[in-house]
Length: 151
Image (cartoon, rainbow, N blue to C red; front, top):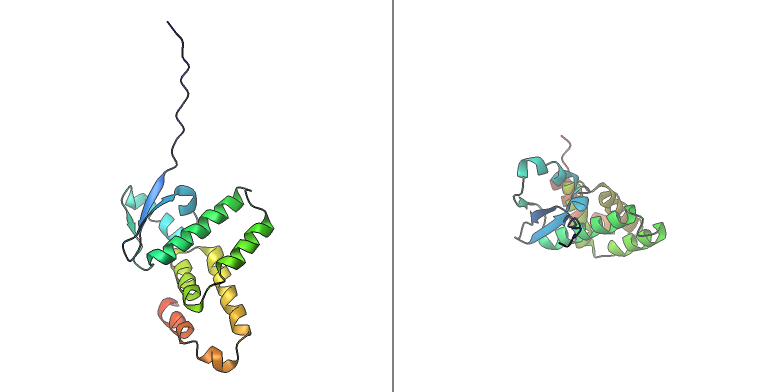
């Protein structure tokens, strides 16, 4: 009789399924969910159910998940600080509409580092504009009026 040693099967990382406002489905690793603080709080009640993200489109949710995955790699020392800083600069080098969408969604999902990055980028963008141009940033004004409640 042959004695075979069985190796334990590698455990799959637990995935949580998120569904965006427009119906896109995203299986997300537990390490990434930790970065999405608003979602992390829902996990015990949600069980294995798909968690609807009613305020965020699939395009924006995909970018936020990418951001969290990249920063998770950085925390696991797979990336040097200068690599992640360069990646961050490239990540927020987008048009104003997309930048504002990322800002609002990172606030809603409580992705603190991304929220700070987007706020800093908006602030830096405003520094290069004239007062008239800043005054014409209707989206910025609407963003703060509609999304940031001072409860």
